[in-house]
Image 1 (cartoon, rainbow, N blue to C red):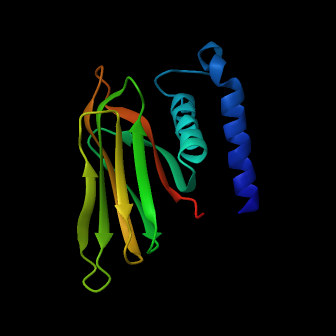
Image 2: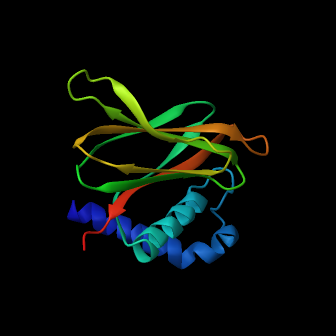
Length: 163
């Protein structure tokens, strides 16, 4: 775990260090490169931690194609208020959607607790967790921009740091 965290930290440091020149990089291909979404995610992590005083508990970057959905499953703990934020690549996504569902511990059925389907390239949900349970984050694209049929995205799950 320590090695993985160190690798992620190094990756983010490199992305931030070289972020201003990614378009001048020979390996950079605007359509297929993950560099742009990593920079978007890095900026949101910095904002969440430095300005909102949040602890990031999950960060994921992946590729979403056509009208597929991606899911993140996570146990969320009682007594915490969680922020779930997801964003598609700027210029490729016109409408990025997010739904958060809670699994009933007895029936195992999923119940929607929050959604953001506003037409924007990002989506946000805030969830006050009253009982520890398994949650699913459903990430999808409502509409692509500029003729694209896929994009990179990131999702961040965090909560306020305890006093």
